[in-house]
Length: 98
Figure: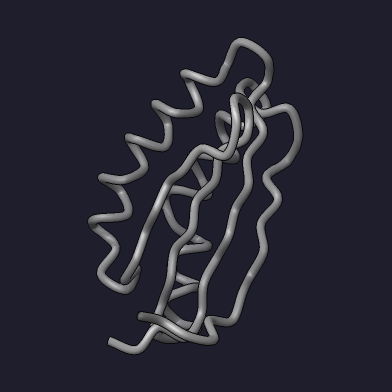
């Protein structure tokens, strides 16, 4: 498996919605597990209100399938209620993997 591309998404929870964002990310793990082209998927918490998702793919077709899949759709649906701002989504190139 050669990982070449990734997505880094940073999410800022509204005050009082931090646990809801964490729960959403826990649920998203099961969705990511069903995505055959998503090779790596992590959800993480940076500080009390900042969360993130990092995923990696072998090719752009896998990344595009993920970006148009169920996790972004779920974020779009619940984001206005849970997030203080739109997700900061960055497409990245992976330079090295250990």
